[in-house]
Image (cartoon, rainbow, N blue to C red; front, side, top):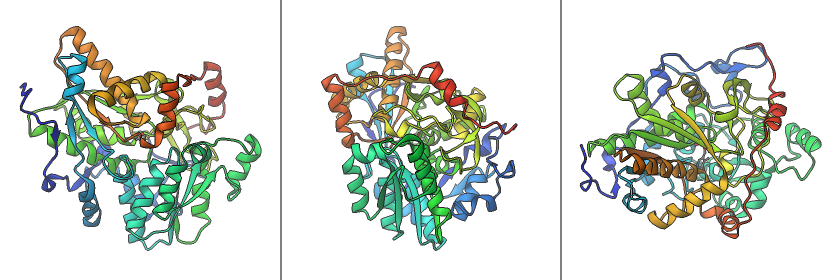
Amino acid sequence: MSKRNDVPYRNNLPENLIPKQWLNIRAFMKEKTPPLINPATLKPCTVSDLEPVFCTELAKQELDDTTPYIDIPEEIYNFYKMYRPSPLIRAYCLEKELDTPAKIYYKFEGNNTSGSHKLNSAVAQAYYAKEQGLKGVTTETGAGQWGTALSMACAYFHIPLTVYMVRGSYLQKPHRRTVIQTFGGDVIPSPSDTTNAGRAILEKFGKDCSGSLGCAISEAVEKAVTGDKVKYVLGSVLNQVLLHQSIIGLEARAAMEMYDEYPDIIIGCAGGGSNLGGLIAPFMRDKLLGHSDPYFIAVEPASCPSLTRGKYVYDFCDTGKVTPLAKMYTLGCEFIPSANHAGGLRYHGMSPVVSKLYHDGYLNEARSYEQTKVFEAATYFSRCEGILPAPESSHAIKAAIDEAVKCKETGEEKTIFFGLTGTGYFDMTAYESYKAGTMTDYVPTDEDLEKAFANIPDFGI
Ligand SMILES: *Cc1c(COP(=O)(O)O)cnc(C)c1O
């Protein structure tokens, strides 16, 4: 089936072949993902439990584990057409440089102004907020990609937005903050004194606390539930976000099909699990239906190793313990990872869907890399392929390179496909520190992890 030289560098689907439905992988799972639990009742969450926090339509999507395909509303589809399809690129230059018999493909989601895949869900969530006639939405942002994407989407649908930005990033990435403000978003560094959750964390960890995603989530949720016609939106982890991100995998599968290609190995970086969940969705469907058997790899930072070293238990999705409980691989909701340049991967938990697929062995492997190794791969990649990758995405690059090198050793002509989730233009401080040799690799000790595990509440479920 080798069509080595027929495949173009950039395989863009024609506009009329952009998928018109999202794929809900939960509908294909033999064993369903354990439900979200309301911590007050210890019963599975219902739409009415979620409605005080989330838009109604999104709450429905969150709990829907039976509808296999969900129509993409026309207004969202029209927005998608402004920047989609994203290119599926055959990495000819990287293959040549590595001198590997493997074929390498990547799906590049950094071609929009927000610079990452997060826009795919941001536009959907802003649309449903508008449809419901809300007066505003709140959210958190870690590295800033989600805040940027959401501010673009909210500007388009004329919805006021408040963003709690993890203080470390707020200080480290002032330009991200300014982009969000330019699109009209109100940015507050977290932990802040604007919420009870923020004040409690400030008291416990001090005013120089660099914050965490989990902590910013608590603040944004509190702001939403105490506001009038304001709801909370989230850029990862949730089932609805994975649903929206399925556009990535669906486009990729369709584009590959045009050239009779199908990946043997599929690789995605994993923070909260949304790009990975979306990237693998149609291929995982094929696998669950017994039609194919690709090998899936999730890649995370060694500094925040939820899949590789976490526990598969019920835990809160945030540090302030105000969210529902999710069964997921977690380091403990109070785990605050060390500063790491892949800010988008610094989350204590993992999507319940990705967690379940990994637990059941359908997602074959999780691995972690230290950040200097990741930047080495990022630098190598940028010189072959002419794209400056985001540190988060570079975790997947590193794994793809390692797999391609293995193919060279064994002579196997495998087809490797990975998600290149974004650009690294706002991460130049990180690149600088890598180049200067001042970048360090912090890996939590078993003792550190045990301390964090001890804070996972035991609900007896
Ligand atoms: C946010 C982000 C990630 C990680 O988030 P997931 O939900 O795990 O996909 C990865 N890459 C980039 C560029 C991001 O902005």
